[in-house]
Image 1 (cartoon, one colour):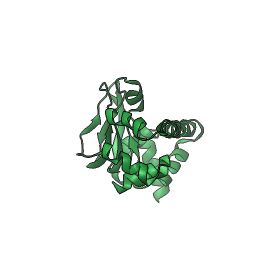
Image 2 (tube, rainbow, N blue to C red):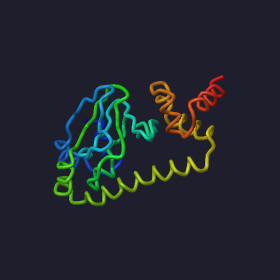
Image 3 (cartoon, helix red, strand yellow):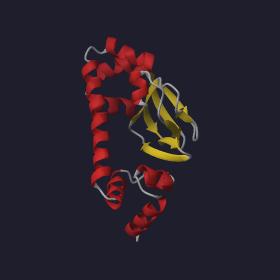
Length: 189
């Protein structure tokens, strides 16, 4: 729970007392390798902090899997569109290895407004941060070539390259597995 506390305090700027008031809303959950956090078409009723492990976010279109992101330790995971707007999930989210999550249900999440009077501002900052990350990813896909995207992602996420199948990384970076292998070979030799 210490990792969750540190992340929430640094990310949302809440105090120790505020965290103590809300920590009971989170439940530790183990998600085994291969199990799903959520499947496409379900309603996402939870938001989780990844204490350990990797979760792949992907969709299947025309018998082709498209990896949107690999969520790693220290980050939150949810289908925000489903969680906030009560829509069916557009994504599958599957554990790539054994994961430990701290999870808050949608019902408990709503209690944050009662416990923390400033939760509206905190939530606004969270959503804005998520949007900014997405904007940066879109900009990188539009402005960087395949090699530049690889190098930027590799420098920010080196551990992922040792634990995630290359076809997932290639899909996420918008390139073929062959292109990723060629670029990777160039930079490891």
